[in-house]
Image (cartoon, rainbow, N blue to C red; front, top):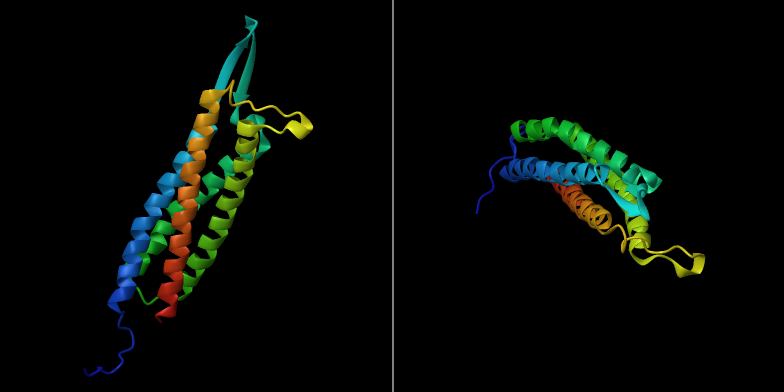
Length: 179
């Protein structure tokens, strides 16, 4: 098998395939993060207490961890939407290195932010489901069942977004190593 001469400016077909896969993974991450932010931000439940005039209400912004989760997921969603332009650029010109490095760094930062928000919300959801007997915090999910289900579902979408971001980081690393 003969190897041809190395030509500068010729893009290996594998890098174009990586760029196309990158472009198709970004909308999946957008859907996961944006849907989880919307689901969390619209979560509330009201329970009557003794009468119709006294009610207990659970909203996402009652807990700062949930607010941080919504803000982090929204920021990552906005970043992913803006990064679609770079992804399209990499399909057209797969030999760009600086923009690929920039995407790698920003994807890593976005993954860290999304993971931090998801972890903070997960800790509160765990506490809502199980409670903590040592400090007399009771589980509230027995009373606020739909609130807890919706919040838990929101976390699933967010963790799916984290997994897709990890795949995007790995793809960028592979594309950079082929240069």
